[in-house]
Length: 169
Image 1: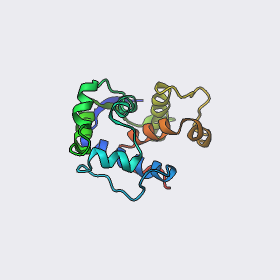
Image 2: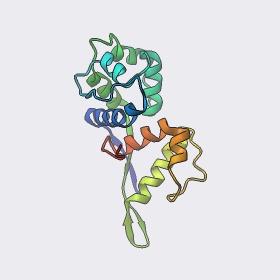
Image 3: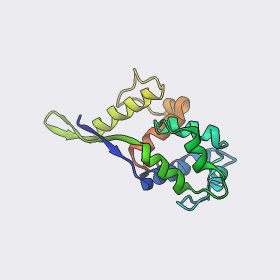
Image 4: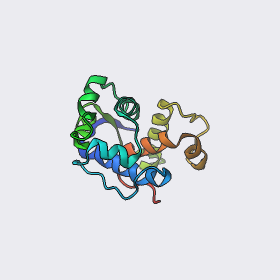
């Protein structure tokens, strides 16, 4: 598998948040399914639409989700005051610090196979998040993993897909 670090841009990050909102909001009765996220969405509106936690735990969560080491002071500067700061601020901060592996097809039996490369990369990212992947094979049913590790699965799939629709709900 040929992999190279790839810088995500602010639009990639926004698209990841939009896709997470589309998938997760119907499952949270306190989230606003109808809310449409964009760069001008205030942090306050984003937190209400997604039923997200206050800025400090949210910053820790985002560091884990995107494998970042952004300081609490840097997060506070973009997450507060919540009514004045926007999702653009968050996306730009993440984009400055976030790189993920660019997935390129592997060669299997003299054929190019992107699916195998995506599977291998996803398995690596899930393991990094603490998900037990030892028994995970391409033919494994995804439902048990979504039941026990929903957040990690959605986050890592969304990041690999760069926010493109990956599940129809």
